[in-house]
Length: 133
Image 1: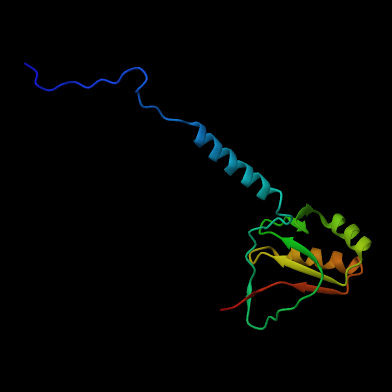
Image 2: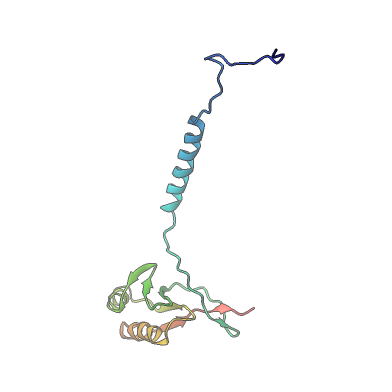
């Protein structure tokens, strides 16, 4: 004789998982991430600047050129080559050019960028460094 009474749920009393709130939350998260993706105008590269003890901070308006470890060149966050840099600098005629080169980048790529800037008429070429701590 079974003294325990079995409890069974009826057809309307079964438990279920409502996925509508989950879908709503995921939609809101994707919408938020989509809006954020278009708000970042600059592309950041993983450039590790070399350290220097005698560097100084300056606030100037300048064109930024980034040289990666592999030797690829970006200007203002967009991939380019030396001819593109020269034509861009001749059009804008900035007085300053900041070269942000990875500490492991080959010296020749930095020299190519500096030489191209001088040909385009840029008066001041600055090499960016990190503060040594």
